[in-house]
Length: 233
Image (tube, rainbow, N blue to C red; front, top):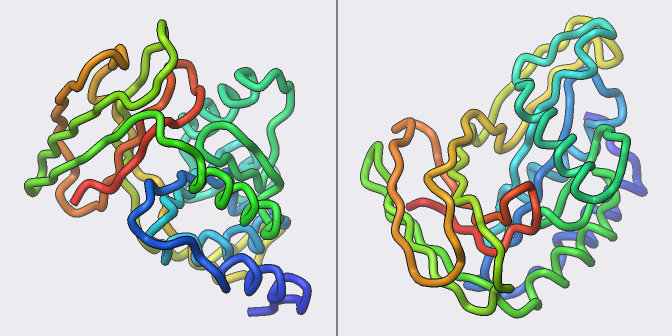
């Protein structure tokens, strides 16, 4: 697969030095599409993010490019709605691909590896606002959330996300016609285990698709900042 020298250098910069494991992971959501000719470089970065133990990388395929000749096999209209909700939350009127959202707070063009590195590092160094743990038993997960330093008067969604670690696409039409592409951490399902007032420790449970990995995001209601996240193991 073709990769420019500039992109190779950026990716090397992004992953040459990683913060120590054990810190709360940073959530990076990539809004992408098989109908977007600008997306493959960002999709390749998602493969690298998926290898890290200090980042939860999630690829959300959107459907609004389907009309130009190729219907994205992994697109979900709910992913488009989530991207639009982020735009409204941040006072923006446009959405685009590839776009990365970091911890529900900052957005960048998906292939800007150096800026992504800077934002991930900043979030890893930030003081924790809440803590979350998740224990998985086959098709059920138990989630415990605890406040650390949360603002008063806010509520939070405890979101359970499941994904496929690797999906392949043979694209036959559209801007990427003829390409054989692999996608990492493709989001398959979303559910909300409950809403938390952020005042005291709370426990939630949810049913899972047994064959898919799962992560937990604690996010301010209304698509605000993600204040805690973890893998369900």
